Every structure is written in C-alpha cells, then in structure tokens.
Amino acid sequence: MRWKGRRQSSNVEDRRGQGGGFGRGGFGRGPGIRIPVGRTGGGSVSGIIVLLVLYFALRACGIDPLEMLAGGGGQVSSPGGGGQIARTGPRSDDEAAQFAGVVLAETEDVWSGIFQAEGYDYTDPTMVLFSGQVRSDCGFASAASGPFYCPGDHKLYLDLAFFRQLEQQFGASGDFAQAYVIAHEVGHHVQNLLGVLPRFNQMRQQMSEREANQMSVRVELQADCFAGVWAHFTDQKGLLEAGDIDEALNAANQIGDDTLQRRTQGYVVPDSFNHGTSAQRKDWFTRGLENGRLGDCDTFSGQI
Image (tube, rainbow, N blue to C red; front, side, top):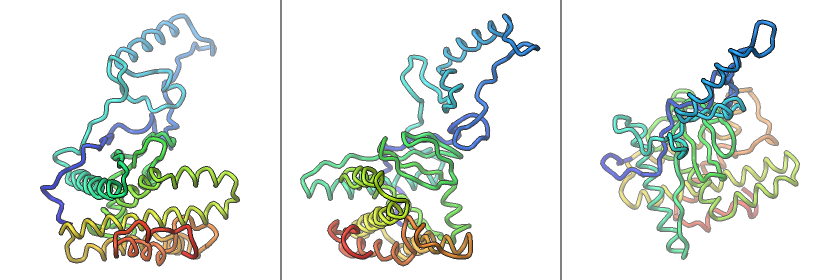
C-alpha cells in the first residue's frame, strides 16, 4: 500500500505504556494499593496517618486512590481534574503507528464521502493504541483478545503487537493485511452509526447462545464487506500495490473460525462460530471490493 507521506488521522489516542490496570492480573485485576495494618490486624493510628498522607499525595498528582482500590485503571488525570492524559496521534518515530494513523485517515475520507452521498454526516471513530491491556466503555480487555471496537465510546482498540502475531502466528503478512484488520473494525463503527450494532445488542438478549452466534457471524461478515468497500475506493485512489488484495484475502482466510479451530484444537464446532468461516470472510470482503456498494453488504437476508 502506498501510504508514506499521506495524511495521518488526528483521531488517535496513544495509550501504549500506560497499561490498563495495576499489577499483572488479567483485565486490570491488580493488587491496587495495599492498606497498611497493625501487627494484630487492626489499623494503627500511625497507619491511618500514613494512609491520609498517601491519599492526598496521590490526589495532588492527579490519581484517584479510591478508583485504584476499586480495581480501576488508576489512570493519570490533569491536576485540574480534566480527565485522562492521552498522547494524541501516533509517535513520530513509530512506523507501525504512523501506518495505522494513515489507514484510519483513509477510512475517514472514504466513509465521509459515502455518507455524504447518502445525505448523512459521518462521525469519525477514535483509534486507541494500547499495549498489554486497556480499559474501554465496554470494560477491560487484554491484547490476547485482539483488536476490537467498542460501540459505547465509538473507539476501536489496537495493540500493534497483534500485527506481529498476524504475521508470525497466523501467516498473514503484508501491510494490507494490517489495513484490512483496521478497516474491519471501522466497519463495525459504520454498523454502529447505521444502527446495526444497537439492534443486534438488543436482539441477542432474547436469543440462545447458538442463535446469538449465528447473528454475530452475519454482523462480522458485514464488517468484512464494509472493509472491502473501503478497499474498493482506496484502489480507485491508486494507493494499492500488486499483491495487496491477496494479502487481505489471506488474512481473512487465516482468521476464519474454521481455520482457527482446526489450528488450535484440531476440529471444528460450527455452532460456536461467531465470525464466519474462511470462505465466507473472503467472499464478503470480495463482494464489497468489487463495486464498492453498501447494498452488496446485506448479510442479514438469505444465505451467507
């Protein structure tokens, strides 16, 4: 993909190195602040004084000790209480982050144009770069969960280490394989704006696990199709290079439910699929790619 020298999105929060919580517990279940107690187990007067000093010292630094004790992320706020401090935009010396910022900017341009043509305004999502674990409006998540979109805060979350995993563990190399991952998550944002995700979240409360999985597959395949729509217009802009589409299709193939289950457990359980088979993921990406029409991405009618 010809991306160097192009605009990077300003809608990037770089939280790498901040962590999502204290300690090594998963999803922020760290030890927090340990409360000093007396030798007999009761709180001594000196211990209480130390606690008070510590409390006000932390508050002066912009850290809420009560949030830490409750298992929160303990993220740093400005002295004036203005909220979390987040570096905005990718680091200038980090090529992977620069690339992600350019891809996000390209999705902004494409989807703004599509929405405008339909008479609507497109609201840009924010991409959060994190390392290890992160807190979102959808709760805590670790890097092991992979990239994800949270409809509650309109943000997509990405640990850039996933790109190395995509290449080394899944055999999906190339920058457009990475672009496909980002475009898929942006596809979920488009679904959120169109009302698809809110409707799905409402419906699945009344569904069995099997039914919810089947509906989830349709949601995920539509996001793949939307990623193909984006690729269609990106190609029209002359940004794609030879082999880029093959990289995206290979990535879609490698992360299909059936392929992943064969790799990890040696057999497949179709009722547990929630993203779609490799063949389905490639097919729906291709459908969006061919003509760039949203109407070709109706995964909710008929067979998939």
